[in-house]
Amino acid sequence: MADNQQAAAGSENQTQPQFALQRIYVKDLSFESPNSPTVFQEQWKPQVNLDLNTSHDKVSDNQYEVVLSLTVTAKIGEKVAYIVEIQQAGVFLVQGIEGPQLGQMLGAYCPTILFPYAREAIDGVVNKGSFPALMLAPVNFDAIYAQALQRKQEEAAGQAKEEQTH
Image 1 (tube, rainbow, N blue to C red):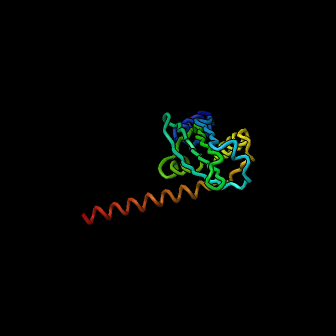
Image 2 (image 1 turned 90 degrees about the vertical axis):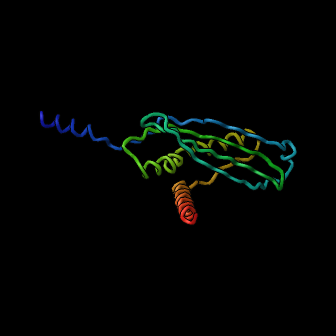
Image 3 (image 1 turned 60 degrees about the vertical axis):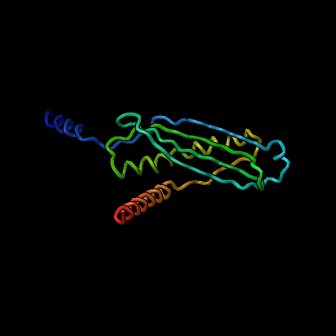
């Protein structure tokens, strides 16, 4: 029995990777319909543009706030029907994960968790603005994260090359 206790104590000293969602919340939400009510008289065939960004901050030793920022702009011709901006955030416990895995977790995995909440909030506010439902298509945050990493690597290589020529 003493051997089992020692084995258990030894395994506690090794940090097991842990990941847990602790809280999801709307940090900021804005809806604007600058051309209402005249925009309601137009035939509804909008051009919808989606801009998105992610950021993260360390809150404590193993807690990170991840913020998914989305801006949706719907236009009919040159008229803006509406603009929705949301910062959907979450606090995540991340322990025993470091380096590239931590970057992937905060830059792709956490935003993937947050996106459905942001999409639902956007749809709700668009509906309250008296516009038809807007269901945003799923987003591949892994691909976006990979592209961002590649851009950073290319920029770093370009800067190193530029420093060598000067």
